Length: 363
Image 1: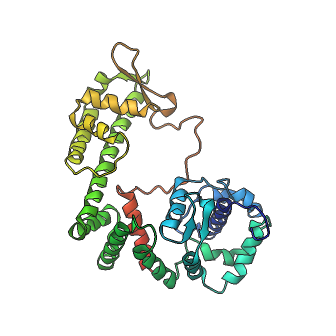
Image 2: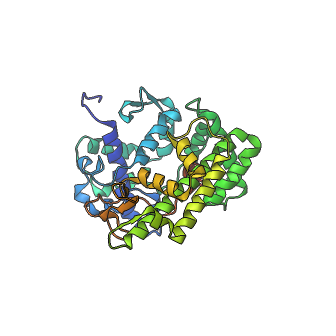
């Protein structure tokens, strides 16, 4: 930009990220579980060293660009690391706080040599694989410098969006204390313990967390019902059945009853000020409808894998032929490159806990 060139900040950010991940994968493939710490672990190894160009790596050509990147970018103005005219990444301008964090994160003797090489590469130049040492600066396997971790922890409790800061500060402090006292906690047990602690200090925040837990649990139960329907229809010659026939399937009826029980537990909790559009009506059906109306509602909301055949005399359900259970859909895009680990129910809170643990640890 200084030289008058038009550049896309998003293209450059994706290119540098993919380049760093390529090197991290190349150097750590023998490390057990390495794919859980890195993006593109399936796609990036297909790219040869001679093809490490910005055009080849940016815009999802080397890996699948996923919504997580939007979330990662959205947190920058909320933490006060950039000034932003709007929510578009290309409008972000790094401010003094962001420059200080970057300096602390990259602050070692290799930085001065690495940045000019990255600049040349971003300008369309080639990348020499011998520059591996410089790329370790931004490898997800490298420990975060202690000064950068302290600076970031302070940001989590003091900087950024005033609307979200009180909740973030409360959760960050509670999580830091919990992990200091019980470093062995993991997964949903960690999230549960954190929620209980917050109940005593910030009951309004805890109420939101408890409701969110019930919300995700209810939606999870709804998807379990749909999976049961998919399995049942896959076992038929016509990939179809009536709703009455499906309800006669004992295991499916049990899952419907479990869904209804979870919905009723959620219904008993105070409703937050903002909920997903249409959720109250959906929850009312789950709580007060009979098995037929609940199953009808779930299938009508799906409409892709499962759909209603309302032209028949008795309401029928049809399975899309590309979505038979235990078969790969035809003509579908390649699956995204996500880790296979089971997701925590309150995944955002769990991610906050994981981030807090990273900040506390030296390696």
